[in-house]
Length: 304
Image (tube, rainbow, N blue to C red; front, side, top):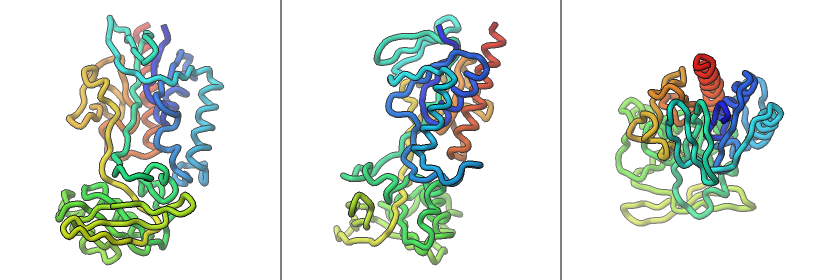
């Protein structure tokens, strides 16, 4: 039986693995897809302290090498269930069962997609889900933001500070965001609003976004929109459904846990974007990972 199972191989989970392994604990990381999470799709990470101008891919490669050198075991398996059995945790994956003394859930979120044909191919090549991460690459450019909630409006305001123009595309005829944000957007001369519109098609050239096509939902009119980048802010989906009977979550599926990473289950800790919090960035993810690992190690030391 190993000490700690970390579910999720993004920056939060991999950071937790580093801290736990350095504390002398035996650690296994479960990842159902590829290591790195959403950051691997960022063409350039410029907002991480001390290591600017690094691609998301290179960042993940360095992080992976670091945990491998510490002897952390990595299993590319999906965890389908975790059961508490007399203060031990039975982890079921798609290849079998293993027991652990503590669990760190760093399952992250997935971005809700528009479902357009070449959407995923253009991520990092003109399509982004993070204005804070990638906005600087579109200085003095015309960009579009898709969405109508708080995040979409915040992104539009953020991008308007450096971009030449922001077109905000919303499928409804009114916003569902906070009134103060709506007022700021409506009164910003650099933000154009297309109500009752959707993105109909991404148009690419040489595997890079060239422009987009938008559709008026009231008239059916389809027209091109010349933008250099598109920021999608139509929601996120926490990857927590398999653990809804294990620890407390809100109705959307975000884990109830504070900055201390503690949950209502003493041996289970959470880290990363699936935790209820206001800022979801690379820096906050790795901070969560460190906190969760320290908390888990303290729990194990106390148990012994």
